[in-house]
Image (tube, rainbow, N blue to C red):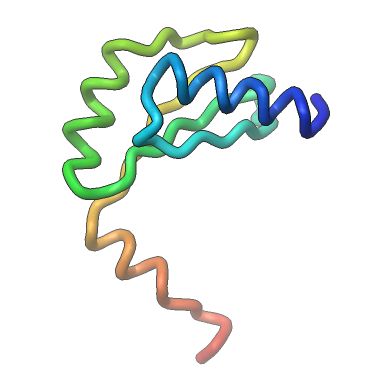
Length: 83
């Protein structure tokens, strides 16, 4: 899948599922996957609502909805390689 196709699919996903989410397309072991990330605040609630609306397959892509909590974001600033 080329960059233009990925960008078009991400734009279509944003139009269909909502622009408040972040979209990424990656190759996984089960094939191309659309990863929808729900950023804070209320990311857990929004992700839960979105999971009810999204199909498991969309435009020949597997769909995964993820979210993070504030604690996880703070932890992500730590880089063990800098110690």
